[in-house]
Length: 299
Image 1 (cartoon, rainbow, N blue to C red):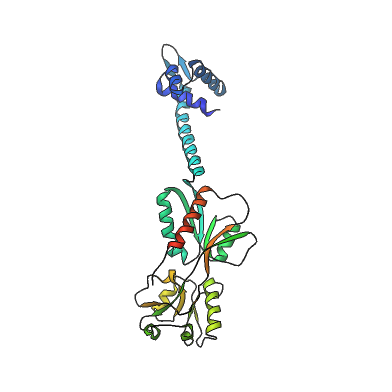
Image 2: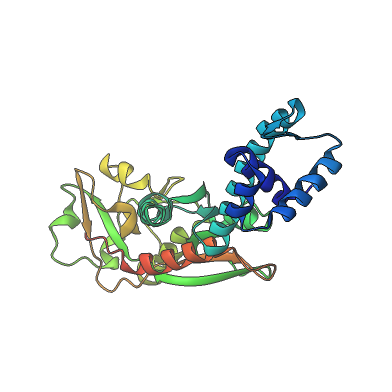
């Protein structure tokens, strides 16, 4: 059953005559008559009783109610497809690791959805290892995370180096120094994320070169965004990305470290090969790429 035949039928119902429907649809009246005859033949019943005026048959009235709903859905589908092709609508499934999931992504997505209100977002949060699995299992389309180990089926596009800073409880002796060096940290109790975390790996590499063995056993906290609360409680100190500790909590101090090199690389992780991403996904990738470089959190 052709949509154009149903549109012709509904136009006749709304305007009350074949002639008016033909003028509105820019058809000849014989064309409208032929279309309705074809539709009636397909349905197996008459739609109109024809006389001085035309009236709907009982079957025609039933069909008209259903046809109206069908045409509304058809128009909605056409609009949705058009919006999807143009990049104005669609579903984007994005994954993110901390601290970007809490401290960067909400602002980026707020700006993106303000410009594209028809977009549907699905956000999942996990470790880099979790995000790799989600990408390979087609649970997400892109991931904002720190650079994982290389993978044959995934591409990593670097965006920015994380900047590491020292987080201290208020009143700590190091807070009184004008300049703090990594060598000043040798006797301190550290708060670390788990061993597979990119921040832990990078920080331990720096400390092993410039500090050597720590004299106090570290405390392990499973979450980079939670560490600042443990520092606030006076449990220890931490080297952390500035995005995770800004603005500082009351009772904490954030200080730069002399000679501290950049931390892990933040970037976008995508599947390699396969079909090209949807236009809306490409637009979000562009938004993230521009926004991440512009976000500067003071300490």
